[in-house]
Length: 267
Image (tube, rainbow, N blue to C red; front, top):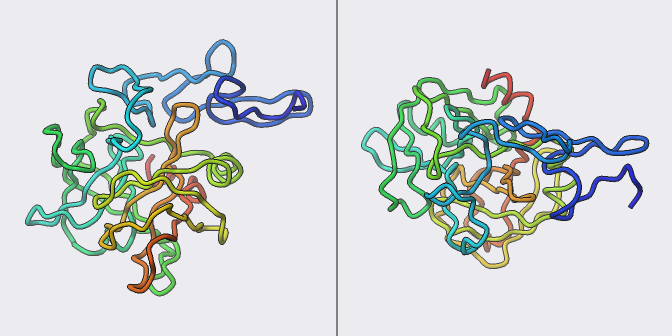
C-alpha cells in the first residue's frame, strides 16, 4: 500500500474515518470521540459515545457470541395501547431514526428503549416522543426518502442497554462499510442476520441475506456494520417487500446520504 492509502485491517490505520492525502492519510472520529495522541485512535469522550457493544460490567465484549447480539441502539415504537408496531434506532441520546411510513402510522406513540431484540432484559424504559420530523421529500408511492427522525422528551441514560449507534460519513459508508464488509440486520422479528451488500441506486442498496427470514419483519429494522470494534449504521429497511419475495433480498435506504439532514434536525 502507498503511504497515503487508508488501511482497513484491524490493527492498522484509522480507528474510524480516513482521508487519503497527497503523501499520507488523515484520520477523524465519529461524534462523541476525540483523536488520540497517535492521531489514529478514537477515544470515547463520555458514556454516550456511539456504537460500542458492552457487557453489563462495562467491559467491551470481544468474545460475545455472534448470534446473541443485543444492540443497545435498537428501539421499539409503541402505539397508545402499548403494542409494538415498528422498529427504530437511536442516533443520539434523544433522537430515534425510523421510516416515514412507520412514523405516519399513529399520531401518538412511545418508544421502548433498552429491551434488546428479545425484549426480556428487564432494563427497558418507555420514553415519549415530542417531535416528529418526516423527510420533506418522502414519496409514499416510490418509497423514496422513507425516513423520519423522532425527538424524545428526555435523553436516554447511556449504558450497556441503551446507547446510540454511530452515523458514518458518507464516503466511508459508500466506499468501505457497504461494499467491503458484511453488515448485520436487526429487527424485532429476527435475530441478527449477517448480510452481504450490493450497491443499487444512489440512495438505496440491496442486502442479500444468507437465509430467508421471517416475513413479518417490522419496518424500521436496520443494518449496522462493525468496523474495528465500533458499530456504524449503514441502512434502514424501506417499505415491506411484496408478498411474493423470498426475503433473501431486501432493500435498504442508505442512511449516510442523509447525514446533513440528520445534523440539521438533531441540533
